[in-house]
Image (cartoon, rainbow, N blue to C red; front, side, top):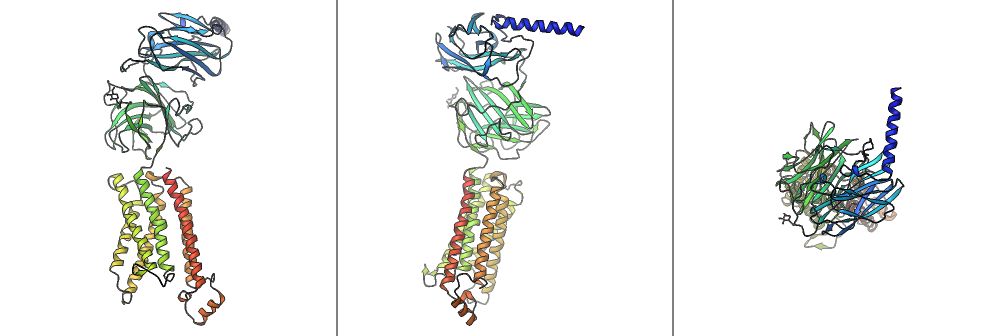
Length: 593
Ligand SMILES: *[C@@H]1O[C@H](CO)[C@@H](O)[C@H](O)[C@H]1NC(C)=O
């Protein structure tokens, strides 16, 4: 019985509310902009948008305001507020554009616009008249009722500022019902990448990813709203997500903004990063309108901060250009640990308060890209070519000399000196980048150092080698071959480990496949030439020379057969073309990272 009475009471109330609101005479909602339906505002992203035709105004100007929806709406309430004091009530007055669809409501000193009927509409326009003594920065707010209890309260619209007003640091207070500034939960929907590069700047890894379609998308966007900037950060991380403003591409001396998960909560704060250690002076003071969510392994956070923050002088100014860093990593009880992946660093510097831009970036520092490229050129291509020439092409140019030496020797020596020089140059770079030995790189640096040592031994041994007719010459030949071979094998291992290093993590499994393909290719070419030189392979050797070889019972490599030479040249050329193909594929990948 009681339930029945309650139910009828509720429905009567509801009916009354709807009836009262359908005519749009909702002056009592002027201040709160709350439809007072007894329901709460939808937590979904609003499917409605406010736009204006100018971001600057002078008193007496008319600014055209447009409300449009992706879906229909039945009721609305549009107001302009002082951005620095949004609770101070409506500012300025409106002029109607379509008086059949909209009506003016007198609200204190100013006015608001509302609907005239519950008829479905897709858009609405009105003109806002900038008053004398207007606040320097004005923001538009709209409450939109889609149907009955589905509504969005105080959807923030564009922020416009008075031209000629010296940019005074605004200090808008958070506009919430209870006047509290505690972080609000964010709707579960991903942030929108719509408008990236047009209405807001975005910085995304992978490039141009869409948070809604890709849960592996690291997303940072910033929207300039007059004197403030709205930041939205999301990405797959169960510890923390952060972004930093930096003067350079090195970590240290950075202004960092962190969203750190602590249990079911996310703490949003700003801090200073002195070196590559923990952030210092963690504070929330410069951040406003903080909101966050944590669900499905994705951290999302949103906040505003002023372009200028005179109250927080340690924050960087957003009117100056900085590199952007995007990082994520583990956290324990709200305390962050070192990021387990290189930060994503913007290619260029960016003025945050500047023009919207879709920024590009990379997790691979240029210096490590050089390291990888030099080593691949040296140990995928240069060394193989040098070895094969020495082993299989000694007899190719019997009658010509190059600078007083045989051709094969000159080419071999040049390629090997080239290999050793690239190795030397390439191995300095990671030490420069890390500022010392990296303890997190596993076996790769150890293998690299062994390769470098062996590579240096080779020319030293070559310089002190005994003359060809010496009795001890066989020792050099044997050592030179074995040290070289060991270096090559270790270099191959180092390359496989190298392409998985966090500072230059090439896309998998493609890169390992290409590298493995190039190794198989090289081994196949060498086996082919080896078999051929031992006479186990009869390709290119005509029957007559074959018989000659058998008759004279000499090993076939001593027979200067024209066709055998053709064969070796073809194999070598085909090998080199393929090898350079594999190398180019990897260099191209590195270059595009
Ligand atoms: C940024 O704003 C500050 C304070 O208004 C000013 O001193 C500085 O020169 C501005 N920098 C740039 C690059 O405009």
